[in-house]
Length: 267
Image (tube, rainbow, N blue to C red; front, side, top):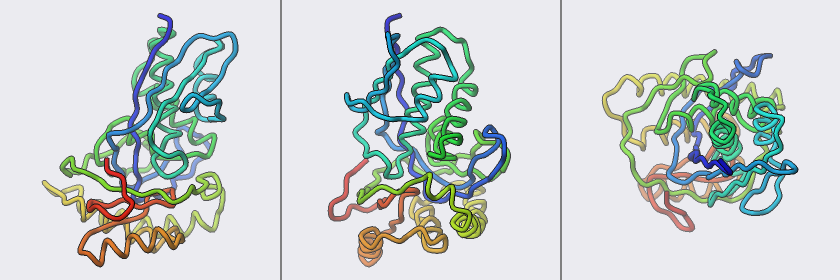
């Protein structure tokens, strides 16, 4: 086999709580999020020298390099293609790591289980401070809640119907900067505890309106102190004034809503 390809979806997080642990396999997040139809396609090939390309340009992608280095000593070229914006809350570091793990498993005939591949991607995220929970969502797909600490790949599916989502990206937020700031972590986790109580109730229902999930996320964005960008706040308030629901994408200066709004893209 000359090359192998794999796809992983983008993931939007609406609520997250940081579960710290010294072992990267046990550090993760709780909360709520959902996958979208767009994502990343990764193609891996044996090469004379290892390289990572994002949309055909050389890129510094630490999660991808970590997954490749942990998997093999063979030099490989990893080409990532995506239409989603980087560093704006779509979990592209996790998606790229996960798709790379799957593609390498196929290319090199490694024989690893899907859970092993997902955990390799999750560990790469934790070690590089690029995320804590996207890989779990991307591994399962759908609208999910994570309520049990200690199990990074365990999630429950919320009974939310597949539907259009509208989003607008303003600017990047450094996930590393947030995760490494103790004061921010305390504020985020305090707000997340309130949100998780609401999400645990939703998880027991036979059907859940997407607007209910968005409202929990909106409250979390305020209580956590993460909703700081004025452009994001303005759009959220405009959607709400028109009778819709909108919230901030975690972690990015970006908005998601079930209602179309000015400047939004649809997925």
